[in-house]
Image (spheres, rainbow, N blue to C red):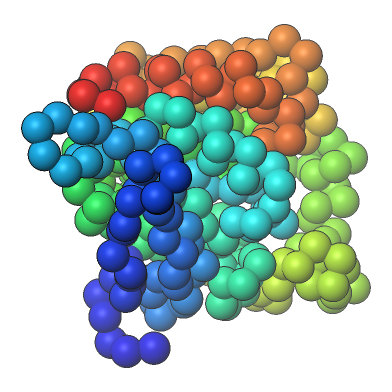
Amino acid sequence: MSNRPAGHATRSTIRPNSETGQAAGVRTFLRTADGIAVDSVYDPGPVVYETGPAAPAETVFVVAHGFTGDVDRPHVRRVARALAAYGAVVTFSFRGHGASGGRSTVGDREVLDLAAAVDWARGFGHARVVSVGFSMGGSVVLRHAALHPGTVDAVVSVSSPARWYYRGTAPMRRLHWLVTRPSGRLVGRYGFRTRIHHRDWDPVPLSPVEAAARTAPAPLLVVHGDSDGYFPLDHPRMLADAAGEAGELWLEPGMGHAENAAGDELLARIGRWARARAGRGTD
């Protein structure tokens, strides 16, 4: 790829769909600050017609999927469709996932992937950017907001861990095997289309709970199911407590883990919360 700044991509002109009158989406590869190609999709969502051509929705959601997800997974596309009722949506595959380049660092360097997607989303002319992350993506949106202050207007973290190296549940013990063992990484590559880096973190990245204390002034919504099999309820409570007055906690009865457990009604509430808290515009 050519030497372009992070988040820059060659994109086609957004043209109206002849049947719906709405703008068509764009799919491209973004280049991160460390040179990784990230497969990314932009859906303009609802457009605003006033006296002239269609104007972009005020809000754009940037969706950060969970570990082993990617932009083409049905659960990621369902989240995108649900949020598109409330604004434009950018989805992307983290490094090592799907068609994106590189290898997964399970939440560390993925902050650079999100940074490129947020920069791209802002470039379409939307006034407000809201990052929405699930599981691993939930930790990434927290760390991105802390490490790149002022780049997002609100943050939604769903089913995120609060601390690293948690092995207190069977699903997390299986995940650690997948990440740390050569045989596990082979399963990740061929079973889940996820290429996992073999190196340990060095240094250990800022933890999600430390990041939650640094997301302000952007408002933070922490969402967690009380039937989450990966992370018990002390995780979301730690995150919300760390955020202080900037944080809000929703504990969802009967909800499991991440995108697959997030129903359309919950996603609609998230969309409404984000538009209200990020600042209601004309979308």
